[in-house]
Structure formats: structure tokens, C-alpha cells
Image 1 (cartoon, rainbow, N blue to C red):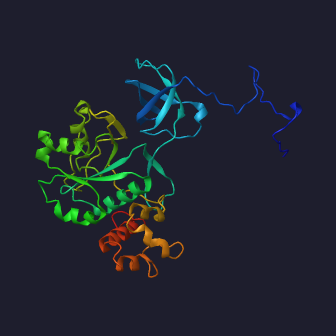
Image 2 (image 1 turned 60 degrees about the horizontal axis):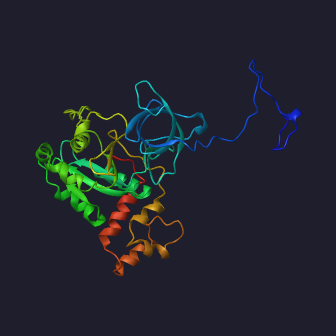
Length: 336
């Protein structure tokens, strides 16, 4: 087979036959300097709902983007019909540089990464204290994913009227993760929503949790205008909730610049994409102690320098225990 270089004669170029003639191919892409800025609110079967100047626009991805993915939270540039009128369609021609990307895999053996959302800066891990029972390993995995993506974690505990929050919080106090505890009664009268809202001000927050924990109910309380989505009930046989959110959805709060992104309930949170060495970055009090670690240290082996660092009083032993607990989640499947 003959190979062609960058510089070829006209006779060397193969032209695909066409009744309409042909035009030379080019790698030059239109700049679309007049494109309007928007934000992707949700994705549904190749259609993207975007917010452009306060209007809801339906768009599709332009061919020039190729295989580049577009996800909820993306800041994009759009052209075409931007009126937002019924049956109109715009085109996404550019995806702006992302400030953060929250990823997950189906399990730890799956190399295929799934981007959950882009451009968030906080991850709210919603967990019920009972009905269904809390799953600390899933919480740990979400924390690892948050640290890896550079998001600040927030622990939101629901249904405190069914079980006390103290025993679960004891596991996360050494991590310094901020938390909000709510009950069903407080959620009904709006008190819980206002308390959670204080932690969301001026931020783009992703809500993650397994089904039945009250995640979507809480989001609906935070954004009353979006009550059309139906909340589900916990399956009395399996203890697992029925999914009530089928795709990620970004919703603006009443405070300027504040957003919540509701996501479908997860049954697992794979961490195949996470490099364990990046998790230590979430522990600034321990990170200096790794200077004496052997190369490629897992921070959970006999020669790890962190043991000596902590023994010399540079950090709390509970912090080292918490770090190793989180690193262990990278090696075990959730639920093991």
C-alpha cells in the first residue's frame, strides 16, 4: 500500500467519486467566534438541554466535535436557533476547558471511565442513617473520587429520626469532612433544606448516593420549582430504593451562582481510574511524611515512612488510619 506524506502532488490525491462532485478535505475547523455561551443541564439520547442567557435550549453536538464527550455541567458554545422555541435545535460547536471532572467506573476491574459531571467544586454524599442502612464503604469510595477530582466533600446524613448520627460520624471526624444531619420532619417543614442550603452557597454541588436515601427528595426541597419528578420508595424486601432520577440534572438554586446536580442512585462506585498516589494529596498533614517512603509506596506496607512520621508526633494516628482505610477501598469492591 502506498503511503502519502504531508506534501503530495495533485496526481497523488485520491478523490472519492460523487455525483455532486467533490471538495478537498481540510483540517481547518470554523472558530464560531459569534457562538453563544451556555451550560449543559441534562443529556438525553444525544440531545442536550442547555441554559443560554436564561433560556432553555435544546441542542445536538456538531460533527466537528467528533467523539469529544459533552456532559452535564459543561460550559459550551452554541450556534443555530437559540430562541428556545418549540421544535428548534441548536448545535454545540465547542466545549470549554473544564475546571474539574468527576469520574467513576462500573467496578474496579472496568477500565472504562464514565464522566459523571464536569465543573463541579463540591461533592455531597447523601446517606440515610436507616432504611436503608448506611454503607460506609460506598461513602469511602465517594470520598476517594472527590479527592481525586479535586472536589470538596460534604456528608449529608438523612433520616436521623430513625437512627442516631453519632456512630457513623465517629468514622469521619478524623477526616475533617463537613457534615449536615437532617430528619424527615425537618425536611417536611423546610428546616433541613435551609440548613443544607447554607453549605451550597456559591458552589456547584453534585449530589451522589444510592437509591432510597432521600437524595432526590432533598433536591426537590432545595429547588421547589422542580417538584414534577416523582420520588420513590425503598423496596421492603431488598432494602434498596427504586431509582427516581434516570440521568444527571443541573438545577439552579435561588442564590446567585449556586447549583445542585442531582444524579441517579448508584449501587457501586468503581475506582479503577484513580491513582492511589493522588489520594494522599487530600491529607496535607501526612503528605510531608511520604518524603522518606520507598518508590511506589502504597502507604500501607512495613517500609512506609508515615508510621515513623506519625510516631514522632507530626500527625494524628487516626488520620493515618483514615488514609489507609480510604486507600483500601481502591483495592476492594464496594460491598465486599
